[in-house]
Image 1: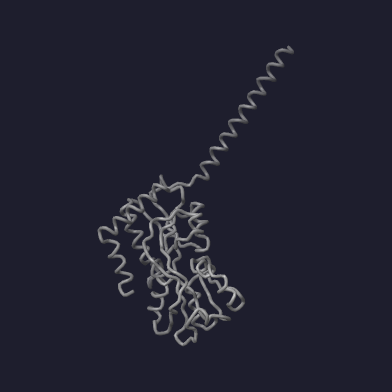
Image 2: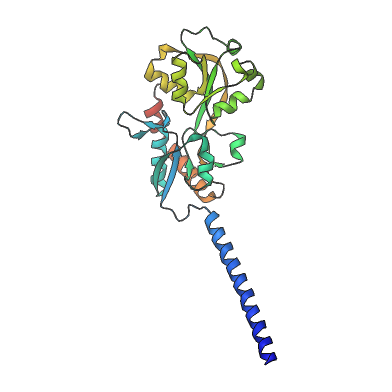
Length: 270
């Protein structure tokens, strides 16, 4: 009887240990699956954008998404044989949205920077840009030095912030020793026009388009700026195959003239 009980206890203990190991493996597998974000099985990929960033991606008079990046992405999607969904996002959360799997591309005048390279994989650059300084036409501001003691604004979490902060001595000369940050460039322009700020630092691509719509004679662009930069598409670092295919599609579009047609549609007079 004692031998029987001993054997039963040993057998019961072994079953418990096997169950624990099995459950541990199961949890590990599920955890791995939940964190392994991949686009391999997706037929529709999501492009994250700031839908106020004209002329790259914005709402037209009909409320429809339009712009250079929208047209470029649609053409690339055809060549990649995928469907693409455009998803407006909080631009300050763009890298978080990408790496959480909520979007598959950051594609909306997205500037290549060393800091961003640590978080995302970039496609080949496809457009050049500058960070310019804009004031009202009647402003007495003509140089960076004239901005001493003035109020200068930027879009939060934009490359304009990085460009200005690369010159910390400049920021310390501003009123309050800091930049004024807005959620969108449209808000920054509105405050400039209302006289609540004295100047803004902004992507030239957006600023030229905006000023053209509002009346270029109402604004002044300083000769000095905060440097040149390049736009590219941001992807997750694990999406290496998608990155290769996207780069190939962009190359094809440049070689066969499709890129130039799209470019002329949006920048023919710039």
